[in-house]
Image (cartoon, rainbow, N blue to C red; front, side, top):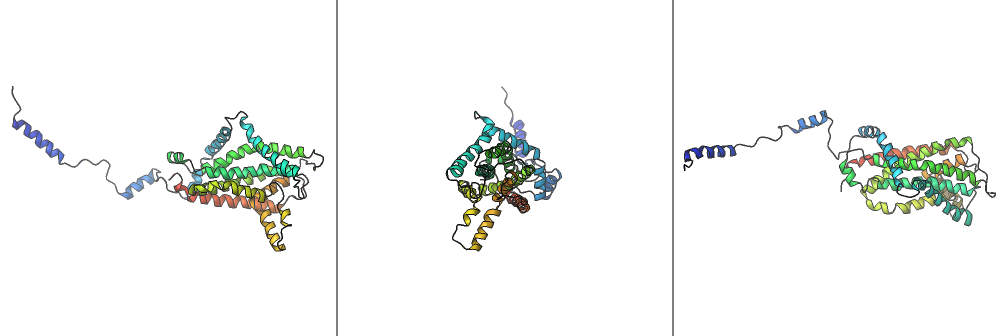
Length: 331
């Protein structure tokens, strides 16, 4: 048998050692940072977890309005899908809450305090305040707890609180129909003032629309705060309970200010704060268009305040939320 000679093996070893000394070919073309930034800008690419300019953020959000609407309706539909009564709970929940407060405060304690129809007064207050309360709690949870979603998909994070409040508005529509029916039927009780359908009822959608805009601003603020400080989610229920009693949901609070042992100036300041704070304003607007109560005459000042609170809270809430855009989804 013949074996390979050293002369035949030597060239192979030399070739191998020569190849090993050559530098590996570059994996990517050699470009400068400025050139890479120019290419990214040319093809519409931008870095992740970077807050876009406000104008660009608004345009991106507006282009996804159809998605926000579909997400809101699907969320509202899926909320009670596994219950036997299904979507009927969207109406039953506020009805049962209103029935409890009517029984305790309207019938047992007789806390009417200058209101001719306390049943309609309480029902309207409970139904509309529930919209505010659910928007606050829903907005607080719209970002926190969704880390995987925020890391997996790239979209304006404002989609989440906006769709949350819009889904609550979707479920509020049938509840408002029931609220109006209860308001009319309450006038059939002999001891309560009759309620009639008037042209003022046509302003109810406008009052609800202002409330929706205001609630969206609240949801923006709560989403940012709870995403930054998760412990705040544990005290929302207590704060909303205080607001319920301080906003005239069940009884007119301003009537009780008169019995306080304070000066007339202090009483005037407290009455102004309680009557003109946002939730009280929106409850006033709804009651003024549905009830024929002397305590709630139609007021241009209240409509102006309702529009002002809606714009102020939405704009401030949106900017507060946008400024934390790059932080959502991070540990």
